[in-house]
Length: 375
Image 1 (cartoon, rainbow, N blue to C red):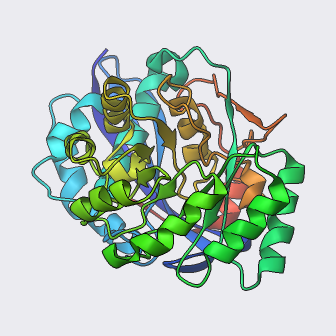
Image 2 (cartoon, helix red, strand yellow):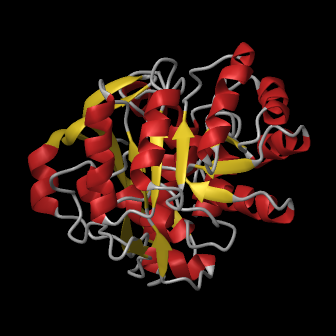
């Protein structure tokens, strides 16, 4: 079955967060999200619809990408190259767009929409395509920075009561050692705990970060700037807690280099950050051969990306709980009819056709701020 690209729609939606989410990059209270809808036309003229979600933020803080820029580059530079293709399927999206430097989140959104449509045309699921056998995955939660330790402990206790099996704390200088120690005391020694610095530290902070070794953490995520691979390697030799890379990992080739240098003891895989789910699978496969544990990170996705992440995280190399929390962790109402929930600390792997979600079109229209077709 071969496809040509049909209609393409770019849709912007605004979803308020149930509570502010603060990291070392800043605080978010609402998500401005770009969705991509594509139609793939098969050789019989039948159209299949697919949706992708761009995880770029409103400002270029987490990465150089931002949502307005992603919409521009998709419209003016990426889609014309897909339109010119003789045939289109998910596997050729990345090669077709390879000459356009950067913009992995924009590229990932397009690949995701094409993949969803392709799977729906073939009446199969992402989980089936991946060949996963797990039916559930453990669910972790990401806890933002709070102004006071008391507020942080109250938030963590709520997530523990909700059944999350792993707690991740966002940290930055001044909001790290004491807060992590207090949370460890609250949850006890057996609940998995990790921290995420989002590049907030520097090479000279090794002695300070070594104090985190006392708390039995799973990992320290991205302590240094994303381009400081050598610094991460030095830090990995300086602290006992494993160093995990996030922002630094943008491709399978770059991940291999980081592992070889000793900078990446654990890998956080975010499909949007690496250019799409197919590259994410390649990074997973690489890490399995290198005996590097992986887990699936989150970018505050809606039910579209959350469903796809849940299927991805069922691959065997994902041995650590990821950030695939219930939709209600961030949104009072999701844009899908079957939002992700947790049961006994786990999330069910979606098995529906496509990426495993169905849209709540009535609510989606309510939160839409702009829709336009792209020729």
